[in-house]
Image 1: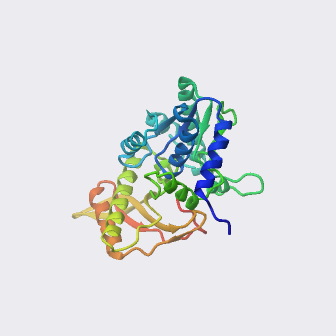
Image 2: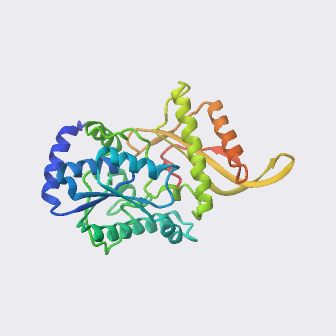
Length: 317
């Protein structure tokens, strides 16, 4: 088994980037560990030639845009926030197939970046693509498990040159590199590139997206609190999904017909495999009570996903 040396990787990658990037670059900054590490590496190589673009697609976590902007400011990374939510909502209108969602989101991302790049004078598009992204997206002899928006969704007529400085690394190596580079989100849980669009089964309307955004916030809040109180270890990834299923329930003495939320929590090492966690029943019960109480006009049932990867994937889409 080979040993990953973050210091050596950093030195070698910066040297390569200095030769490769002969002009202004922009990076797709999501605030996750992958894109933030990529930004840190490129910033060390080209300095102010790099502009980090954060796109608010409308499918982000609660408070995410404010968090990312604040973090990039603290890191001293030049950045710009682009609110493209209406554009993404329109692009996904009527779309229910998960692969189509991912590819539409990938193309919309690139189009937004091309527009911003022209305004900035950028020549290169930097992305935080890592090994599991392109492995799952297929190509060559590999079967497509699911297209990642930064791989399977890239349009063939993309005008910028693509730079992916960490594409050969796995998640554990990226986290090790993040610690070496003093990136503050080194151990932040993963968040899918397409965002909440792939946590809404079926059409990702603004209304259904808001339901799952609030449900995800409750799951994150309760599991992080339980871990802090010593009731459990914090999972590797944890979130909620809204299903295309409505069920009968009771609110007071009145029949209700509401949505179903699935909760997912897994442990993993490199994202290639994952094990569903046996969460404490009291914690699951608290999550269910909060979701059905705080979202009572939309949700009346909560279920827990106990599927490992494989046969499932970590995200549902």
